[in-house]
Image (cartoon, one colour):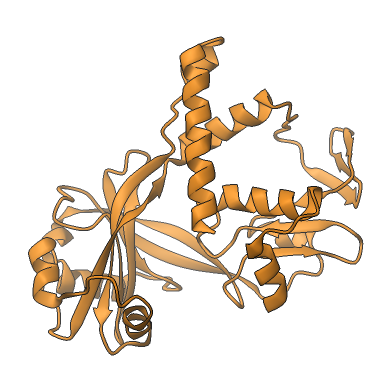
Length: 297
């Protein structure tokens, strides 16, 4: 699924560059076509933990560093236990959200989409959607793409979707001695961290499901003590998960189709969601991923 998303992100970026170069309108001339921000991604932790042991077993071809090698590569880390191992991936990164939202809006409108804003959906069925301003759209298929705070409003048959509030700590300063993204797995800690803010000038880290920062701060003082003085704030984050940690594609008994991009990974996979829905519903040709998902369900 990541491969599908990356292909479409890059194709969209190329199309935006072409529109910018053509410069037919002021909006097109002001396009920011770069949609992805490459970063290195370190996965590390106790080699005996379930997650890390599965990673080592499933990816034996990867180079797994020991704790000393991890610290040598990323000197901000301290006090790594001797039984820690880690692997770095260089094909990771963040999506430039503002550029992506604006870019896909422009591409959608260029291809004839009629986008409406600030007008809620009041009713819908399998072939029509009506807005609060009275506008009704009709079509062969209706697909509802709900967010975590609107699922219960639009999908009365949803189940096992949890919105988990998480407090994350942000720090700035020199970030060159840390990986752009990292995840630590051990019996004591399950920490994730990634670059944040519109210009990726700070790093945020937290623990999924922790509503306060006590344990997160304990980790910071033990693992990256030199960064504690660089803390600039605390943010609230909502991590949305399904029971099976899968995205949701389904058709309810009323004939309405649904596609949810949840699990904290929804946005970066948005292009693949669109393709999966299009392939499965519009052309009737399910992608391999959707077939596998349906088989699992």
